[in-house]
Image 1 (tube, rainbow, N blue to C red):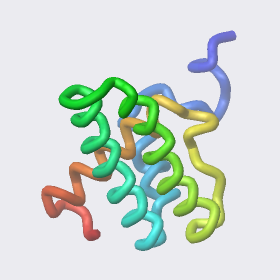
Image 2 (image 1 turned 60 degrees about the vertical axis):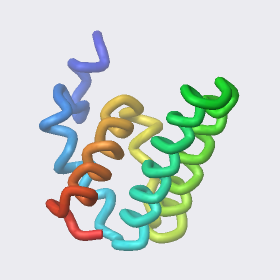
Image 3 (image 1 turned 45 degrees about the horizontal axis):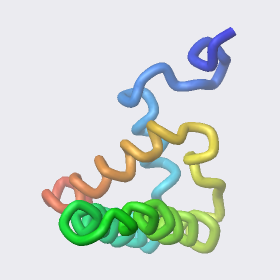
Image 4 (image 1 turned 180 degrees about the horizontal axis):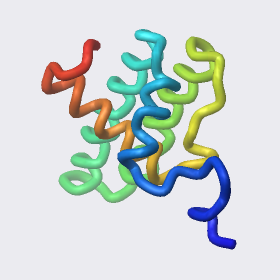
Length: 105
């Protein structure tokens, strides 16, 4: 049985995103996610422009901010462990929505 056929698994990002948002209700946690994602974007740019070793730091920086948000402020387990790709996409969509003013910071 594939993981997409398992009960409780999301079949699409569109189906997953409302769950993602429900796991990011705490404002401080959302802010930490946005700061972490912003730093990831900056570090990835440095990886392309300065030195490839910045790529190693990108996930460490991004996840450290996000996981502090979940463990300290949301008091839940990050969706990264069960839905790694959807969770990553959710981080960037949340970041975009905050930066464009569609979601409060």
